[in-house]
Image 1 (cartoon, rainbow, N blue to C red):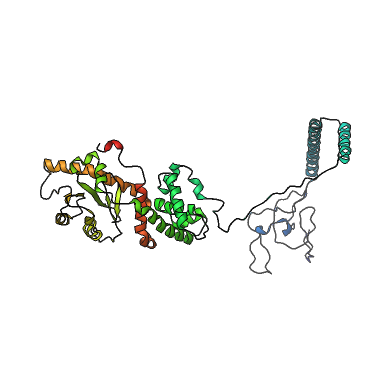
Image 2: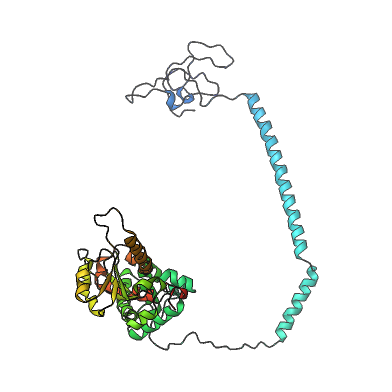
Length: 430
């Protein structure tokens, strides 16, 4: 059990072990069938390494820990071997029987499956196969030549990619949700107008350019997100957006017009019975761009963009809106637009809610006037609400888009005017 040769005359007392290697003394009670003497010793081959204390030096003798018991290379008894062999033989017999049973069941299943698949006898199937081969050899095989055009190049224009985002707007509802355009008819008209104005080659078609631009205005998606949808870079999205923006503003600018006075009077709502001379209703959005709305709700004027320090009165004077009115006309404004002196100089009637000033409450006449003006001004608020559907007017404007804000507002106002009327036909004077 040990290859080392020992000069010691002391032997290990464990049966079936002939090691003579010198070890520490360890007195235990062993079942060896003989009397224990003080000279009996157990060698280290019957202990684990963990049973010994750590040796500080190589030459130090190993010392056993307290209460350890021999656990390695223990002697085996004859009756234990017989018992183990008996159990092993029984296990082998049971394993052999199980394998025979599994093999027999698998063989029976294969035979049943083969019987179900082979409906014809083997001889009959072989005979039929031989007849088919002979019949095939007698026939003359003629191969028919066919030709097919894989593609024809007609021009060098780069069409849209295989996947087009524009395919998603298959209905008027989807078109309005994604672009703010009320129906597909108006959308296709805008695409045709853009196609006539652009002649440069591009990676996306004009239809996708218009869709990209309107989705930016309506949903205010980042350029990176639009680049993923249209499979182009964010820089290309920005370039196409700015180019299409300028063209759309040119197309939609004629939609925003000052109608003649006769046209305004002929489309006067019932709620303006007390303000029949009203020509325009002025208001400003939160991005301080002044616009004018006629009583019927049509946007007739969109000013240029101004900084946040510019007052409503300064915008009114800078745009010279009063020059578009005739003496005797009336203009309806909010309390914040202080243009009383300008209107008096041009003989324009100013319709504005009364101020409370030092009074605790309005008089009956002032309260009725306030309610009447608010009822009439609700149409301009509804027009503003339609403008604010385009989320680019709500969020923070990128500084790179500031030069294009005038074009953006013209497009949004033009699309708003192309929407269904704010008032029903029953709300107009007959």
